[in-house]
Image (cartoon, rainbow, N blue to C red; front, side, top):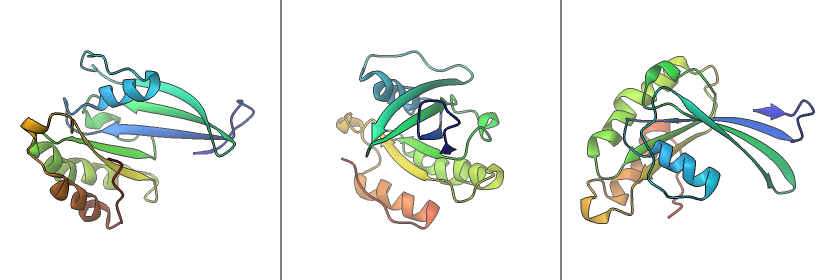
Length: 150
């Protein structure tokens, strides 16, 4: 993250979506970039999208990487979104048992921004992780405060 080098934006951020395969990382990315909720194919390898927007009068460039749930892409960036599927409890467990450890071990910036996203909340009948269970996961993994967006 840092100031632009004349690229038409004030700040540039790299964001990496990590978590188990099938939790909805690609769906979040496509929804954010194109405001579409269409069904998409699973990511193979790595994909990224760029979105430019203005927030508070500042022009931002977001480069968002989608890793297909593969650890080998763990060193791509210094800002992380961790995604789990509320219909599959093990995807939340894997965030703390696998993904959080990978980020702490391989991140070059321990002060990077980290967010926990519980995805697929619209499939309430299949929900395996309650909101009350998922939210404290953020505090446990990063010893921080949390804010609900839903």
